[in-house]
Length: 463
Image (cartoon, rainbow, N blue to C red; front, side):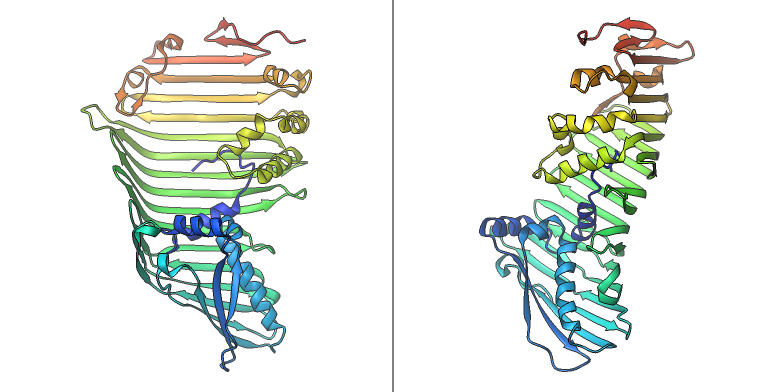
């Protein structure tokens, strides 16, 4: 997981990954996307309610556009359910009990007969209520036409609590596990849980995710993790910028293997804490790894290390971040969306506010400890607003100020691990005389010095 500056706090993706990763439709998801996107077919499900033990009301069919479902399936379904339940509540007297049966209308050719989801809702005289949801176990062999594979969904149960008019919604879900097999096989362990709180637009703003185990396999690639927990809070500034605050994660163990490379990791943990003062955002993100082992299939010694460090983002203007976030939302789906914005002319319209606060990125107290010696260092990069003579990219480059210092043990520097060479360019390393090499570099006022020596830069003079 990257703890880089979250210019776009994409709760939709985070929440969707947490919920749909355990969904029985995930294996055949590509088939559904292909069929529905090409035909314009909406996601469908039916609802049939029974109020206070009376006769069932007529079955209703609910439709959700593929675009809405793919963007955030949990939000799309909850919005449709809220709208439907609210319509019926206007005609009922509180307190009340509602028994609901939900059936998804996925293609039976691809998904077979999905089980009926039961929802039991109790609402008191003040409109405060709780819904208990049960999604039974389900097993289906997916046809070759739809991607070929096996879905073995172990079941789900959970609760949704709310105040009057289905406001202040919270949830707590328990997954019994899932196995999905085709060329890309995924399995999730039982006792996976997801809980959270929603805002008025049914976006997940607070999330607690507990993932006991997961296994992924594709040809020679294998990935396993154990004891993963994620806690995240989405906040919105007074001006509308959305960002994650007080976010933390822990990973108990990871195994990763592919041709020529094996990685084992224990005790990976990190957090992100942000602070907003006078329209300026600062982020701090400490991280640690208790043990990381990197090895290959060749008879070379494995690299064993532990790591601690802290990544910091300082003095980022709130309005500039909001503008970048808005630009990102308006772009069509693509890789490296933010990089595309930075390289475009649109970025220059945001540059005045972004540069004005002299934003800075720092890697503090980096320490990598190994039996062969250690790597220690720090890195600082900032845009000095006092050095900006005009808002053009060459001028912004000249306003860059950077400094890096690190030391590395000689034996570590020379170690060669298949898949990873801890081999910094020796020409830039200076013998520190204590069993370590050192490297110091500074970029200041368009002048670069490395280990105290001036280095010419391919930056022309600017007037």
